[in-house]
Image 1 (tube, rainbow, N blue to C red):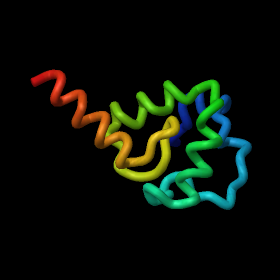
Image 2 (spheres, one colour):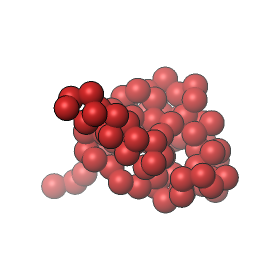
Image 3 (cartoon, rainbow, N blue to C red):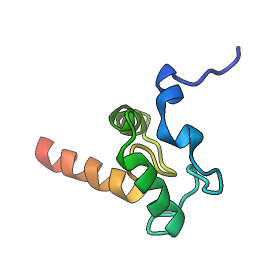
Length: 83
């Protein structure tokens, strides 16, 4: 069975962005992560991307304008609200 990217990927700003940045390995606080987040800022599928990363518990890279530190902070805040 071949893996296919979700349909929303075709609309992602990173799809046509500068490929010098490794979106999946951009370390929090790095220039690469900052540059990736800037590309995400005006992306039409940013929210879908971020939600996907949160639902799938993505641990690495920049997704929807958030790196792993940002996602962990959001998960922590959600847990505090739920408690």
